[in-house]
Amino acid sequence: MKSFGNFRFLLYSLLFIVGVDFMALGVGLEELESNINENRRDIILDNGLSVVLLRIEGAQSASILLGVKAGSLYEDKVGLANLTSESLLFKNRKYGFMEIPRSIEAVGGVIDTSCDFDYSTISVKVLSSDIFDALSKLKDIVVNFYVDDEVLNIIKPNIISLLKSKEDDPWELGKRAFWKVLYDGHPYGRDVQGDESIASLTKDDVMRFFNDFYKPDNSFLIIVGGFDLDKVEDFIRKEFSKWGGRSKKVLLPEVRELRPDNKTIVKKGLKQATIRVGHLSTNIKDRNIYALKVLNFIIAGGGFGSRLMDKIREKEGLAYGVFGNFFVDRLMKGYFFVGTQTENRNVDKVISIITNELMDVVQNGVSEKELEDAKNFAKGSLPLSMESFSSLSSYLLTEKLYDLEKNYFIKSIKEISVIKVEDLKRVAREYINPDKLSYVVVKGE
Image 1 (cartoon, rainbow, N blue to C red):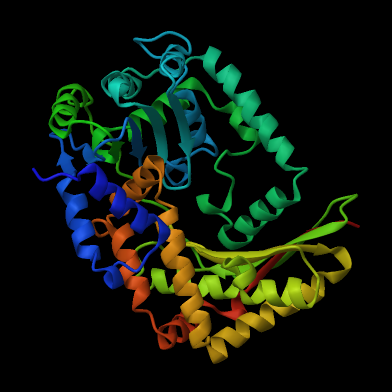
Image 2: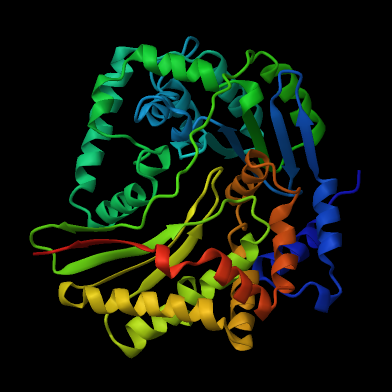
């Protein structure tokens, strides 16, 4: 098998990370992808576990990421998915209380869990010399899991305390209120961590959720870093074949299109108002997703290079910053939004500027210079977002979770390079609707 030499890998990595025009340097994206594929191995075990191995020659560490379709989208009780995720590392039928995290940390590694709307993850970072021990412990987490009241009595008060602290954070208040306005009645419309009702969740609830969804046919194992492909594959086949069972198939709730709504939350003592403006959008499978990323840069996602930053901060002096995004990395419909903070007395003026600018983009499109600036930003920022093993693991997990084209994260650069002004005008008209905007404001009295 052909492999990256250290110099060649360094060359490709540096070019890729800084967003250089590969074609201009005679280094084609096709050649880069070919070299990646020669060091990438995709495997499906007999039990249904999907595995991706990406070897980086010369690397001395590895990132291990296990993703499971077990996010809050799948829960039947609020907060159950997150509570299950939080319970995974404490102990199991083989290891005692906090024994696994302590053993990983003892060799300089890191292990953590997280829960999102669509999926949950267990992530491990270790030196290459410790990869087999880390994989063995990861296997034991999913094969020998159990939870008891001792663990839940630690976790639940911590989650409830965190939820209460969010009530004093205008950013969090605005975010959660905005989700509810867009997705009321759907799991996407609530905090993944749940609410105070998690106090009533039991160990039986957690075990049921785990047994329903933490199964190999519902999971994806991603490993990126320095290791021997054959040895790691053999180890995974041997150890993870002990993980059995089939996941529960459930009918996922569809996202309903709700009527636009405006919501104002008043909190004493706030001198600044937090504003969120937006509406439902598409999902990660949409063919126009890269055009939307470029369009977002022009509208609000490009920092000082965006239209709204220029108008609201630079010209009007109404806010320190403006941000926006198409949050469409979802199984179901995502959303588009613009957010900022301003003095309470300027709320109406800022909302008017945002709305008018969105209408202008829809009606008149963007300029060639705006497009070129946005392309340069995107071609630089996308590679920068992949410069660590952990971020590469996350991209590979996204590819598998959402059944995207292989190495989509590389091909995205090529897709962005061919976008035209006419494409952005079309997607602006298709994906931004000023008449459907909802507004959430958190402000002082």
